[in-house]
Length: 356
Image (cartoon, rainbow, N blue to C red):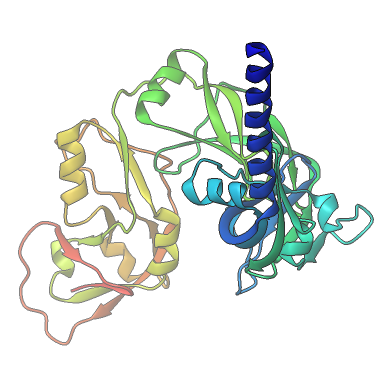
């Protein structure tokens, strides 16, 4: 008797719970939820990118979307209270309608509701919601066909100067890139990495050209044994001075005719050496000097390379990739010629450079 009463009480309790659950599910509510829509990167031969309002592709493969959804009251409450977290929704190239037989660059503007199939599912939560609206309503997506190409690996220092290498493995990186892609897989080594690579091979990341996939690749680099322990630096806009003998002082001025063009070849001026000598050379009034001689008066169009203005105390300064491009100049007589002082003199120049 007691057992029958207990069984009846349990049955009534279960039935009440079931009725309550069914009632909860029968009540349909709407709410707004924010989800991330992402572009799938499973295919190495297709680069998918969102396109902004200006028609430019953006790097971020995810975009936030505000959805109006409908579902059972209990599930909507879980979304609003944060007990149910919505994962990102990924979209494949095939779902967009990408065709391997189409053009190299294809653009799509699907409605977000259609892209999601009108529903939002979270299998692990047993969640199914109907999507009624989306903001933005439409997304623009660009799909670019990538071709498999070998990309040469080049090694640079922290100043962007290419370094000679003992070996690089692999010498070329297999990558997927848009048709017509140029450029190298670039390795940038810090001074510490350069010293380490001079002692033995090191493994570093090479950055591939823009839009190439993968973005980076592991390469092994070994540099030749370096004879200098000093760090490098560069002067982007070296200053130029003029040296002329005392016999020309106050009588002629020097005009460098093609200085701008030649300075492009001398710039940037990369060098290395001890800290004090680097600072002295960097802060010197002139980094390059044109030497003018008396015999230049008789020459119809004298030309001479610029000399690096290294002083006696800067013996450990090493100019990297020194240039010897000649610059053309002329001597113009001055209206007055006061007596000059003895010895050669360093005088300033401009562009076109002049030394009075």
